[in-house]
Length: 322
Image (cartoon, rainbow, N blue to C red; front, side):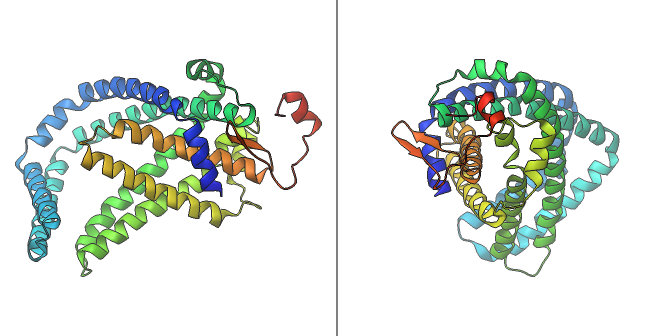
């Protein structure tokens, strides 16, 4: 039921996706321009190298044969990719200083870009929450400005932790990919295990941070209280939340890959901001259900708990009531 209600909330708030899309595009364009200006010399040298081109050709041939069903040649192509990868690593070792500086710059730009995008996610969550609680249609930009201080502090804490987790996962998946290629397992089993590991890592992150944003926005908690509430798993049915997030992650993967392959990337303009919105909707629905607070999924439907929790005196005077 949580997933069903989250989907209905998502549809009811679909217009906010276009506003978030515009915000994300502005952040991407600015950060992309800075990134290209900063690391272009190193990227140009890397892309122009014979080692990099050999790796790309090997991967292209591997994917082409895989899609065409020519399984018999996959083993030799896999060896070619591993050889090209080893040559590229040797090249990078000779340019270690440039690699480290470029990597640090990319990391800094990524953190700053994710911080700004996090402001958009906070505004999106606030707009959706106001619609769920009060049927109020709040302007995206006005909500962004009104919540700028709380959103900035939230992202100043959340983004570094998120980026650190993402970096650890990317490094682990990088080594896992080549470790699986070197194994005796059938290719499709290796691919299955790799995707499974990625999905599990993302699901784990979402499960343990899902309550953070709703606790700030709907619960009106302080930053410290919201963090404590998020990572405390007491009476939160963690396995149920994790299973729902696993389904959401798989659907998001499928939709984004389909948009990339079938629309030559154009569909990503809608599917990427939609992915963040559906996750936010589920986080809010999950919070409302657990805290036994009634909420609206559309203009004609209100979801009420079997026994609605009465508001405390503090909550009443804060304006938490519907």
